[in-house]
Image (cartoon, rainbow, N blue to C red; front, side, top):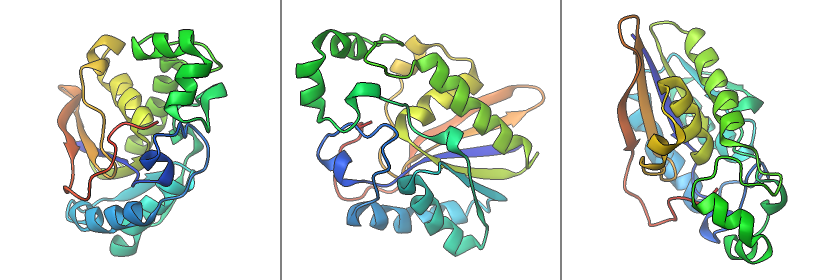
Length: 209
């Protein structure tokens, strides 16, 4: 059985300010680094065989905390980047709502392709899901930890599980430095084993893209 641990990065200043990150390379803040260091021993106890990370620094540096304990290298994969949020990237969420009210309303309603040059959920799920599958295929029967981003993690896992957008909207967002666990076997394929696992740390926003 192959085990896939899909780990959201630690907190950033843009998370704390409710600012849209998307694929902007925003680093971890002090809280984010604390979260990564605190979570790393729990993940090391799972005895991972490989670590893969988005090439954005907030994910790569989160993965580095685990690599420091395990001695495993971190393989970067740009396909694990967060959803590209087009014209919203760098805006506070309130600014996005003010400047793009129609697109914002569609996004809030769950439209998978709301406009404003935002990457569609279908494209995001396929991109991240393919990267997750490739990471798992590299260590059949092993455990892989993948450090990525909240929105990308949800859609990528949904792609592997075959869940549509409506189902995924009912799944709570990953908190910073929490993870989803998927397992795969020949009889059942991919199945969800756990979601939003992690230490309870100092309060931080749960869903800032």
